Image (cartoon, rainbow, N blue to C red; front, side, top):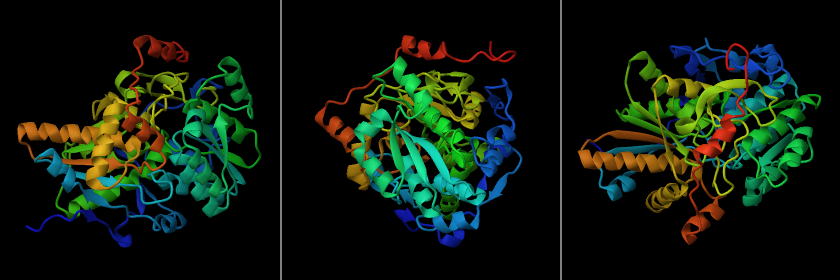
Length: 459
């Protein structure tokens, strides 16, 4: 049998022309979002002041299994997609494992991450609706960069509220966003009422995605012709990101392979949800039974230590509430937490699947993450993003288990992007100054104490 190639690229003709909506196959649906103004389930129309109409429809649609990708989106996808499926031969050899390790590399674009897959779609729908500007938040900067690229392509002005600690740690992310004509504001800021309130209560806060979301939503709903777009968590985002998993499955079928284990890093859930989508479909429908593992940072452990409850999606408590695994909308990760994966909650879709036992979750400390990252870089020649490196860490751990048992399992993980804007974190790790932070139960209790009271549901 011929050796499987290191890299497999699909042709443009083989690239999926539809996104896959995982909710259409779920046995039980995630609980509905709650409108904080009425404390009743949100309707599609309730979302129109915040989101583009077609995106609001995708957010609520649990019936349409496959959604056609607009031609304009496909044309932009073709500039960097299909992305390669890569066999990690060097890593396998170094570990001495009988496991076969594959990774889907999403870093072949200027944003350096998978985020562009949804950014293009959301910018297109905004342009199609005739909107004149967009707002968003960004944590580590990948989403802000990706959306700036997409907005520049479609000619839409963009304002990005960037988590303050990331804004300070990653000035070159700001520079790239500005290269694509995006405006970047460190969050919380004095440019919004919510930002001013947060600063008044905690002047030295390092910020959080919840804070940045609040500011971006406020800016959107108070600006004519403007809407808010989000890079993770939402159902619509997981829909757009399903192209990752769809391409992965096609490529693995071409190699006569199927993963025993699928691993993805987990912050809000966009990469994980996109990667696992078709494999989770197989699991739900009984066609296959892969182990699916979400990997999150120990400093922001929403799945492994959070509560499955309704919570605000933002710190300012203006966005709809969702039932998800959450640490509380007021939770702010330690400032020494490197990279993204710092959202207080997890995608409602993924939360429901985890709650119902369809997937597992592990939390890992950042020094162990960077140990895996540097090992991977030396062996595979790609400097991985800190977020991606959570998945690398667990892929290595699972491969070593195979070494102990002698099982030749097939492992697939998502390499969400590159780490070239994370050199301060790499430098801290190499200098030995990086510290692990694990919140105490008391730290988490403060977030849980702020969970909303919803009459008849959560009191």
